[in-house]
Image (tube, rainbow, N blue to C red; front, side):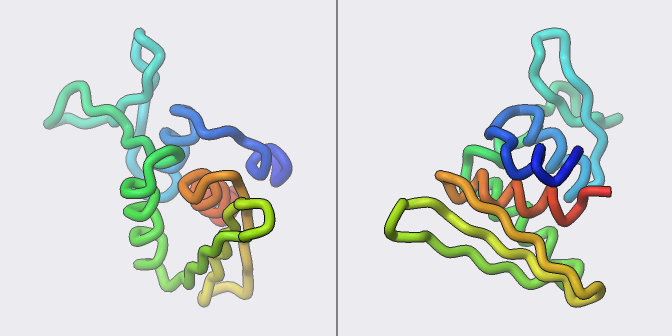
Length: 117
């Protein structure tokens, strides 16, 4: 994905699957019903968490990213109500920033920018 595609990506189950794969390193697949599921040899029918729409799940992704020596900042811009996120890598001199109307979506965009290859 390009940087612009990530910055404009909407909250979706596809985004949730990408976070599952790129941040947590867990494989996913799309079920016959269209939802994204976690591949597991021990548990069947395990849905990908809703990272892009649920702050509790989005924060778990932040915690995972911070385990790899990253610094995370989030703030609300009062004028327009949007959220900005900055993820800074201490290992590499890199800063990844994203914004969105909701905190979970801004978090997911920043995490996808940081893990984009």
